[in-house]
Length: 99
Length: 299
Image 1 (cartoon, chains in turn orange, blue):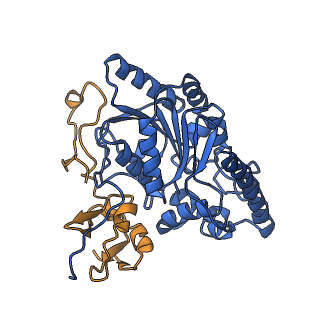
Image 2 (image 1 turned 45 degrees about the vertical axis):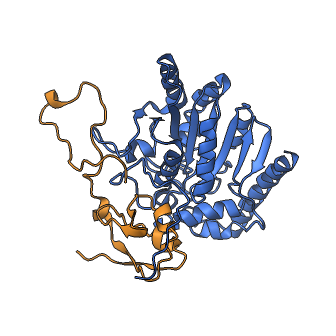
Image 3 (image 1 turned 180 degrees about the vertical axis):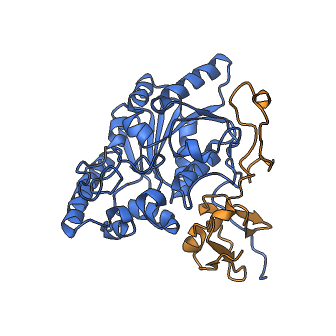
């Protein structure tokens, strides 16, 4: 993950609250892009060979590595399916999103 | 769970762009900047003109990137980067890398004069163009990077684009800049190595990165990486680097060049093409590739 950790959306009540220069003040982590998803990836860790290809090709930085294993962050995964397509042992399945 | 095995990653684990960005599903441009920033590191300033990345970054006052971004006018990516670099020189900062990060519209069409000027002055910047072959941000209009025959909203099926893609790499190589490289998002290690190399060299560096766009190409989002790999294997976009405008080196060698049919079939923008249209495209690709091969052999 990136170094910015603040998840709060910055809202200005009035013009006086705004900074004098148009500069970035916070991260985009408030934007939970997981709601865009129709299908969700699920990793079957028994078959995983820990190659790191799902992490490498994830465009949304949603495959995180915890204790040498890939873990999908469903808050931000947009459900593009690149990880399932590129997995060499096909241990990632794209299943219908249930809400 | 089975026995613990050490995970071997081919790229550094630090991310310099965060989640929650506004890229489409399966965006190639997002992948491209992710890999390039992994190579350049935290001490980088980006200059981004109007392009997809101006939107992906997020709305004011939020930004998904950990590095400073200067949003500039469409035609001024290279000159803004030059200015930022000159400012850094004045305060004695020699370590920070300045990179202009533009789409193909901001490089091939609108930003070409600024880029040519910066290359002629040999300003110490990296100019990276992520090429998704049309003005995707504004709704898929044709640019001079669009290949002939492709559908866009301004070149509909009835009036297809007749002109082939502009050979920007030859234009930039003719400026005799110290380093020029083409890269594809599906070969991240290669892209990483080239970006690292560009960081070390003084002078204008040009990176041309092929970034598939599922939205504009009407391809499936999961095919992004597959398309980026196919385009190298069938010779449409060979990966090479040019040093000093003379020394051509092919970095990803293609053993047997595949026909372009499979590549075209995966994309909705080429669906209307008849067999004779495909043959014409194939002919054009072969001619371009043969011309490049001659340059690789000469060294």
